[in-house]
Image (cartoon, rainbow over all chains, first blue to last red; front, top):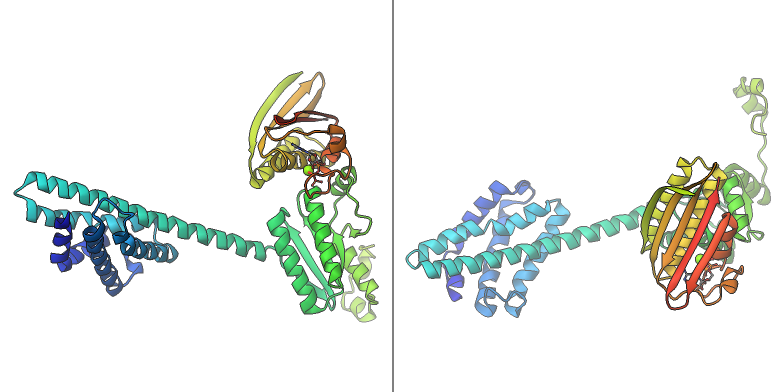
Length: 297
Length: 134
Ligand SMILES: Nc1ncnc2c1ncn2[C@@H]1O[C@H](COP(=O)(O)OP(=O)(O)OP(=O)(O)O)[C@@H](O)[C@H]1O
Ligand SMILES: [Mg+2]
């Protein structure tokens, strides 16, 4: 099928111009890419296609002759996936080569219908397969992006905050699965070392279910923190969670637990030899406070 | 005894365990279980679903809203075609595990519900039924 290779290489300039023209009218976000870049990409793809057809034939896309095309298309699709092109745009990129190519084939083989049909057929199959390659690469890149975002979200969702000198808090929100625990543990241990903290409050108000797996993960985190010289306090243990933990038979005797984050903070302050006292100045600054009495206690 | 509602969910990966918990919570809320009872049901579902996944190589959960005279309740059935449980008595003991868990899930879920039964055959699979009445 060297006819196809010949048609493409002999008319490369014309084909490229027509291809880009067809493409710009059907690809929605053609503006995302510069003309020069487009020209260069299309030129190299055409060269690679010629190489592929010559070396391995238009049918055998897994042949070594097609390596160049495959790599080029994959990397182009991957970068388009990152740039925000839609999957349709990426497939259209290759598919819009069809019409200009078919016109050329007709010009050359119009007199011999059998040959014309055969060449059009094999090039349509070829371009369809190439479009599939672009879609696959596109999807793979998007999946990678999603995975990375999930990873980033995981880290975002486990912030370690410094409440006071030597006292950290780690509010956990959502399910504490194994992947999450790993992130929680790492960020907590890192923060313990970086801030030289003696106390770490793990707040589980936002954890909907505490089952044996979650408990095991919490205990592991606490043990690791202890090895780094920090004592953990679990706060946000709601009454219904406390009851369930007891029924499950989970032993939290060695762990300090508090109902509220503020209680845990108070305890950590106290244990580190500090006390919170009300000053006269504060009372004066807020004259209304006396009217409502001591609400906190 | 009549079944008012039945739903079957797959338990094939850890995300399914989350979905199983959510379904049980949703039905428990619909049935107006107290907050403590909701939590017990959801936690038991979490344990049994994870056992079906981790020890039973995956399976399914069937949840039913059941009515018996004036009483209504939530019935959960966890089925798998895994290796089965060789010794039920051992498996229910606190601290017994063949994996690296705490060994509390099975016995714990039994304590979290009202009716609990295990049908299992080595090499065939396991079916665990748990009911909590209102
Ligand atoms: N569906 C099942 N199929 C086969 N074996 C099971 C199944 N469920 C439980 N087992 C066996 O019973 C043992 C005890 O189960 P249990 O849930 O109490 O503990 P665990 O799953 O090992 O740890 P965890 O405390 O995290 O739940 C398991 O280690 C396992 O050997
Ligand atoms: Mg278990």
